[in-house]
Length: 292
Image (tube, rainbow, N blue to C red; front, top):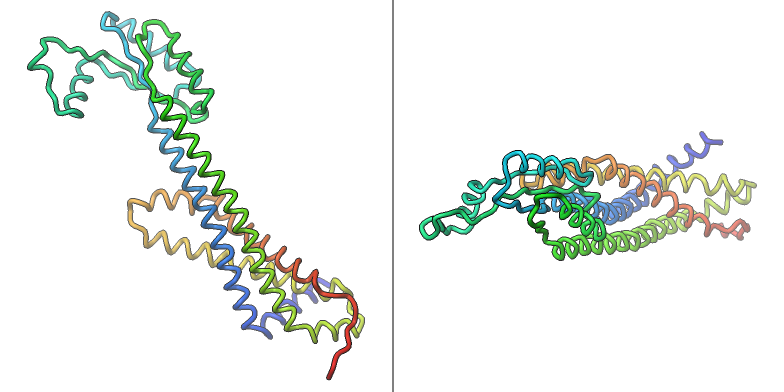
């Protein structure tokens, strides 16, 4: 039975090469549309991770602290569960950074350095959420010998909100495009089945079972879906070779990921299967009169 279905599937492909090519093109376009959305979602995740890596909290220290007290503050911060890493900036380094960033040298006006020592704190990504940020701020504020904790709270919360919103709309767009792609594959399969209507009616007359008639078309859809997926993966590999180095790292990290490649293959299989399944569902089991 399985060998017969496979034989009939490949026979229909070789006997209707134009239909197969058109279906393959439709499949490639459909999977490409869906994969672009998956790619954008992957990009948004990569961009979100990179943005979160740049977010830092700053804890300012009083000038009166001894070296031992500074070390104790650094240890207290580092031991917090939400801290990924710290960078201590003493008064001299703070002065150098200020002059470099602003171009203004206050040393000619002031006889002392007014800038406090500080600790830049990187937070683990899982704690960069609306409620968690507030808890982190309060937790840092309770550490002894910290004068002030400065974070761009409103900016971070707004930024994270827009990142979530963009990802949500990308997901909704992806679902809509998948349905459009499914309809495209369904339409091409429907045309193929319509062109094979005489052959299908003949098979009914000789007593062929419903599954015997329909399964070869479903297998055809799966073959087209897998082939279209492989073409799309190859297409993205070519793009990697043509991309400039600025975008290459970000693109490769997404395209070469197992998740992205799996998503393309699964999309191809699902589109091929459901597109052909919906199309063969239109085949009537009733025998029609054939005019020879």
